[in-house]
Length: 104
Image 1 (cartoon, rainbow, N blue to C red):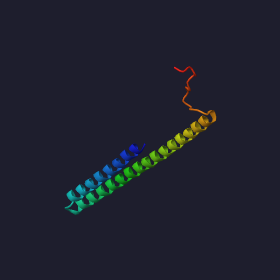
Image 2: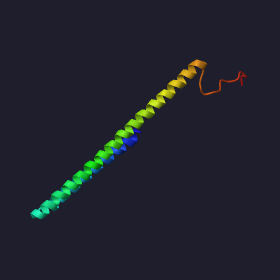
Image 3: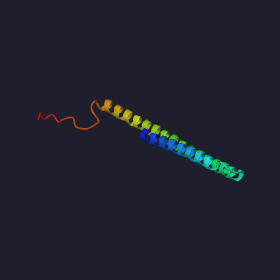
Image 4: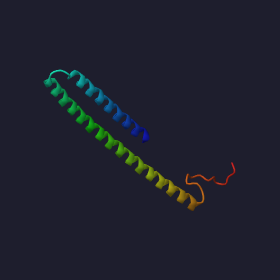
C-alpha cells in the first residue's frame, strides 16, 4: 500500500510542477498591454485554482489510502493473534499435518 501512496505523492508533485511551469509561461507571454496583463492574470488565477483543487483531491486520496492501509494492517494483526491463540490452545501448528506416527 505504501507503493500506491508513493505513486500518488509523485503524481501530486508532478501536477504541482506542471502548474507552476504553466503559470510562469502564461505570465511571460502575457507581458504587454494591460488587456494582455489582465487576461494573463485571469488565466493564472484560474490555473492556480485548478491546481489547488487537484492537489486537494490528491491529498484526500493519499489520506484515504493511508487509512485503508492502516485498517488492513490492523485486520492482519488481529488474524495473526487469532492464529497464535488457536495454535497455543491446540499445542501445535495450525497448518495441519503432524505426521501420523508411521515412521516413514
